[in-house]
Length: 224
Image (cartoon, rainbow, N blue to C red; front, side):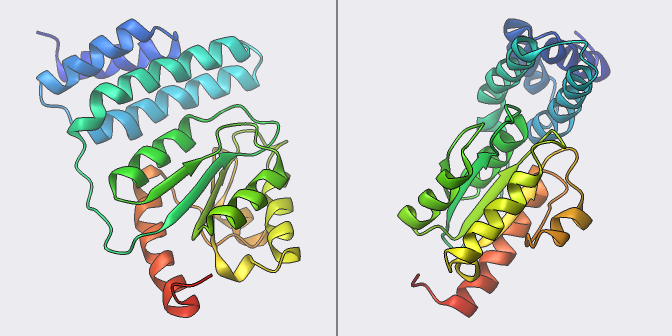
């Protein structure tokens, strides 16, 4: 039987190589030897995708390879998801999630989606490369409590600020919590554009959303 270190290493290697079959195999193996499903997804899956993102930015790989890596992790997540332990929320809320226009890196957003869904939030996932106006239209349409945006490239980060400005122009900024994330997005930058939080990872996103939604509903009430 493989050691825990070997399983983690092989799992990460499979994701970086975009090997879906191997990623699923090592995800199953991780459960059989007692590794924590949540840690496999958020820590080791996240580390693997950071390697992929760095390789992409250095032009060592291209979009097809990034998508293969993301698909490998997504398949592994399906195996690991039933074994995750997440505390559920007592305050129901609708969350709109998406990767900003021009950016196709959605694995971080997908991790947040999985964690928020597991915690009992209703998640509306707009996917990747989302036109900025679509964020506004969807928030209005579903009367969302939370808007989560991610970007993994510094060139697409300004789209987040534009969306927040558009929320203000539409007169609905105070009706919603805005959470941002992604590799180049720092807490300082998030604060500078008027976001409410930049959680450090998918797990922290659940805690931050719970806390912010409770405050929002106390201030705003249940109605939009």
